[in-house]
Structures are given as structure tokens and as C-alpha cells.
Image (cartoon, rainbow, N blue to C red; front, top):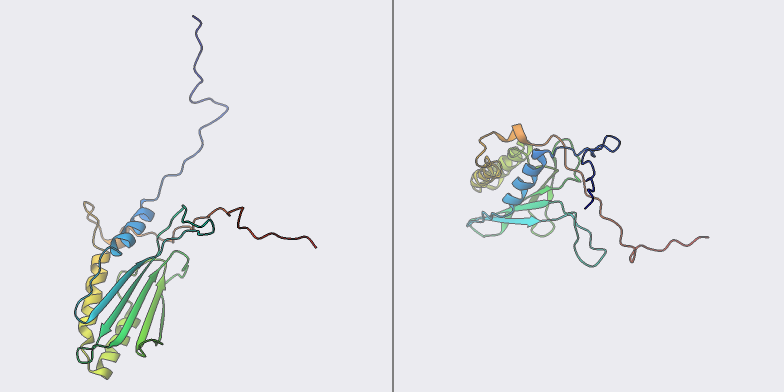
Length: 199
């Protein structure tokens, strides 16, 4: 019986490929977002609609990896007297929003003709931006509705969003990523790529 030597697992002419260490902050970013979409805090006057938006291609007729989470949180405050919306807030989180700070737009809703606030960013703010808080306070004075309860609900939601992940007891700013995760590249489906004809 002849002896056949096994190949050297660490040959000098072919070094092992470098594998970068995963950034745990990106995993926590995904975890916080996905965990927030599993909770609905709708109450009597508050309507909350969490919406999951995965990044995926449908050109093959089905979803295929790689996936990346995105999400929306729609909040609506209804009047205690007529039960119609008097204010809405949409927090939209997606890595494609490459703004250095949250972008806020305030306009009138086309559906309910009440003020609508849109907050766009690649991450959830640690707390409700001061511009939004001041607008809600001014609106409360004008409408004489109890919008301070709406602010309390939002503050509680932000607190729960950034609640420490057990068993790690840390404050959110220490392990939040400094930049958004890269958008995944989905390969083109050769059967649906439009043909380019030469002239």
C-alpha cells in the first residue's frame, strides 16, 4: 500500500484569501429595524402601521437573495371628537436615503387634508427631531387638541426602538453604524434583460 501525502492546507504560494471581520453594528442595525416592525402600538387615537420593505429583485418572477431590510412606520393621530386624522407622521428607513441627517418634509395630506410629516433617513433617529416636535406643539396650540399625548406615544416608541439588546447593556449611540449598509447587487436575469439592437 503506497502512501499518498495530503495537500498542505496552508501552502506558501497560495495564501488563504482574506476574509474581513463582519461589522456587528450592521447586524444590530438590521436587528433594531426588524424588531421594531414586529410591534404595533395602535391605541384609541393613535394608528400605527409598521411596514416591512425588503430589498429584492422581482425580475425573475419571484424574490431572490440578497435581501436587505427597509421599513416604514406610519403614525396617525385622530381627533377625540370626530375621530378623523388631524396629523400623520411617516418614518421611512432605507439604506438608499444617504442623507447625513434625517430629511423632514411637512405638507398637507392629499387623503385626509391634515398635516403630514415625512421623515426620511437610512437609520432611525435616537429621538424625535426638534423640528417635528416644535411643529406638533404649534399645531396643538392652533387646534386645541391633545397632541401632547401623541408626542408621549412617539417618545415611548423611540425609547423602545433603541432599547438595549439583551444581554448587552449599552447606549444606542455607541454601537450604531456611522454609515448605511451597502445596497446589495442583484444579478440580472438573462431572460428578462431587454435586447440592445445594433444600428
